[in-house]
Picture 1 (tube, rainbow, N blue to C red):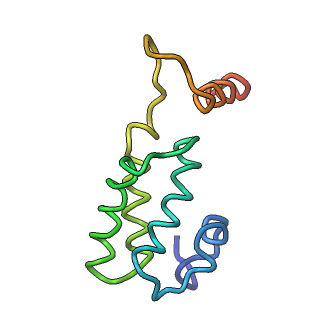
Picture 2 (cartoon, one colour):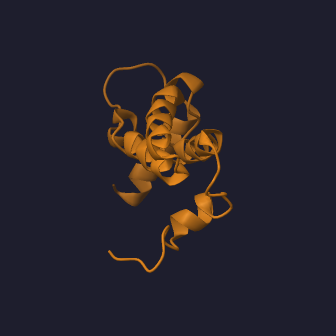
Length: 111
């Protein structure tokens, strides 16, 4: 799609990016990624897991000093993550509260 201005005035932008100063540093980008990761992965995400996404983000940020490039790279990494794409099934340890909630949502929404 073609937008009149960039970044576009979308619900995602209003929720996560509206208050960002475009000259913000990579730490601001990491803060947004951490907030988004909790929703994407349906629960808390460890710092070790977040390091992979931070590295992607910082590499993109370093290339053109744009917080939006950093966010795009980090979000792309999260959306390609097996933890986001797949639901674990089969034999494994007991489910935590987040896994139970996710399964209930799959059941209730028939998805």
